[in-house]
Every structure is written in C-alpha cells, then in structure tokens.
Amino acid sequence: MAGLTDKSVLVTGGGSGIGRATALLLAGAGAKVTVADVNHAAAQAVADEILAGGGVAQGIVADVASEADVRAMVDAAVRSFGPLHGAANVAGVPWKGVPTHELALEDWDRCQAVNARGLFLCNKYEIAAMLEAGGGSIVNVLSSAAVAAFENGVEYCASKAGGLGLTRGAAVEYGGKGIRINAVLPGATLTPMLEGAMGDGEYREWAMNQHPLKRFGQPGEIGNAVRWLLSDEASFVTGAAFTIDGGLTAV
Image (tube, rainbow, N blue to C red; front, side):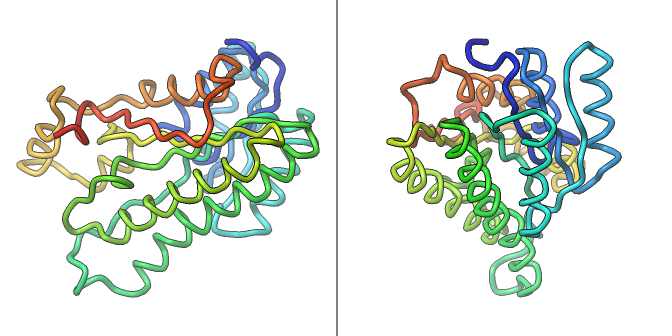
C-alpha cells in the first residue's frame, strides 16, 4: 500500500485482537513494525510471526499508562527502524459491567489510565517523533461507544469519547505540520478482550443482534481501515472518525 514500504510504524496493543491484525497487515504492506503490548510474550509472538513471513518487526513491552514506558516505546521504534512515520494506538481495557452508582473509583481510574491517559501519552510522544521525522500519520482505535453509549459501561464510554476529542483536537493542531490524526470506531469485534467481557449465553446473542449486519466484526476488518488511514492513499484525511461497526450506530 502506498507510502508504507520501509516506513517505521508502531502498534500498541499489538499482541492480540485488532492490534495483532493491524501489525500483520502493516508488515504485509512493507512497513517495519514495532509491536508493543503490556504482555511482552504476546508482542514478541506477533513480531516473530512477521519475521517468519519475511517481514521486519520487533516486539517490546509497554504499559501505555506509564509515561516512561511510552517514551521508551517510541524511542525503541525510532532507534531500530528509523524516523517514525505511522502509529496505530490500539491498546485499551474493557468496562467493569456495573451501573454508574456501583462503579468503584479504582475501576474508573484504571479505565481512564489506559484508555484516556495512555492514549494521550502515546499521541504526545508519537507526535513529537513525527515532528522530527517531517510528518506522519496516527490512527487512534477507539470504539463506537465514543458516540453511542451502552448500559453499565460509563467509564469505557467516557474514555472513548475523550479519545475522540483528543483525536480531533490534535488533528487541528498538527495538520499544518504534516501529521494526520484520525480515529477508527469499531463495533463489537471478536477479540480476546470482547470475549472476556461478553461471556457466553443470551448477552452474547443480544449484542450480536444489535448490529444490522447480524454478526460481530473481525479484527482484520478493523485493521484494513487502520492500514488505509496510515497509508498515502488517505493523504487528504485528518480529524476524521470512521465507524466500522456493522451498522450499529446507524440504528
């Protein structure tokens, strides 16, 4: 895909789900991929998969809620593969599944620490690296919950809505400096995180049927959109939010 060959690209949450699919797709387009995840073994496994297929990758451990980890993560991408030109911020945590009045403060704080603070830290250090590189593209993978709330997930909805505001604000700030920043808002996508949050039984069936396509998304369907947004084919796109949700937010 245009503009990705031999470019240094970073993927957070790259050890599983949407992050893994995105990392593999970017590597397939010729990018040099830094796969970052709080689970180092998972990140390395994805990097090894890319290497086995003839691509270029490294796996590193990073907790995006830690400023030191995020700084080190971006530095590692630049040190290994050159100026940073692309980043997909996929790392996130799910909701607790209780109503607002029962939500513990520590559960609220944990969700904001990763989904909001972590997203800010990633954008902060990625943007700084891209300014040095002369430009780049960032995709923040959020959720349809950024624009369409659901019950018993207020901390998650709030964190994703905040991420949308961050995306648009940063896009306005840096568009004139050659950095494009966009968001992807997936619907329910079959990832380990969603599987753990849903469980089995009636809720799973209900959640699937909320989507007009009557199925869950696949990680690669989200990864394809991320890859396009990071490529030169999306060169006139910034500050946008793409709902890839099987029609969920159209209802």
